[in-house]
Length: 319
Image (cartoon, rainbow, N blue to C red; front, side, top):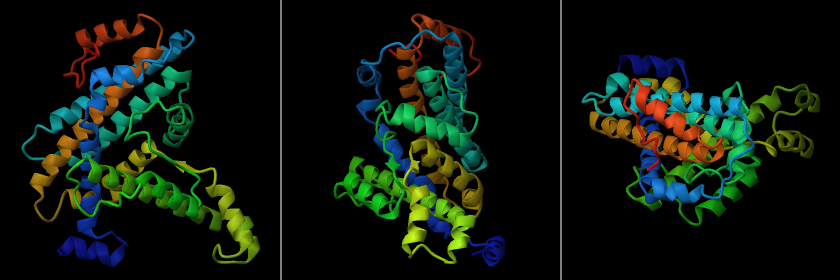
């Protein structure tokens, strides 16, 4: 290793540099493969959302949806520009942040187009996204996958059912759709386990747990206390994206800016970020166009096409 890495390993608990880098890049490679299908082409997205009726007129909600979608478009546009650069290292962390906010604001736009809600935190957005979007089948896979009930046995059972024998994980770069799906589900499982541990740590800090006089969850009383918190919990794609931004922008940051030269891998990575972002934003745009008041989508598209000061990452005519 090297001087700075040695110091960091001496002082902190850090993941293996190789696996941290692979986990960051391989998940996005998996998602990029999965969105590179006709499911995210405009005819398929039109068909997917064809059954969505316009909600009751709500001009404030429409304005919120359009404002959030503009933010998503701008972040997606920055990724398209960053992916064209010959040297990805100087912008890779910024690209990850732009990727996350393109997903976040596209999700907020979908929520606004659904019921006019305007959640003010990332966790609240993920919660409403689950109940109002994911649970209603309004997201195209691979973005539809979620795990509800984070008790240990439930996580394993749900992942086993979704995997259907596909046990590919992110220790290798996915090369085809089957491997990409396995990799995506591996990241979903890892995220579920991560949130499970996070909740368990909070339970251990609670007075109710301390009053039991135990140090683990082996007793029935401790399990019940833990499972009261785990059973209603869930993870979805938006929560995965939030965790990913944190990992790559904080914990894994040194592995994206320092050490061995992975220029070729990072070039592919920035391209993958842009592909996944534009697919997600295009999906959101199709949904929003079906839900807002008649004529509002066309007015929004015409205005943005005429006045946006950045190259649009998708065709807002949805042609």
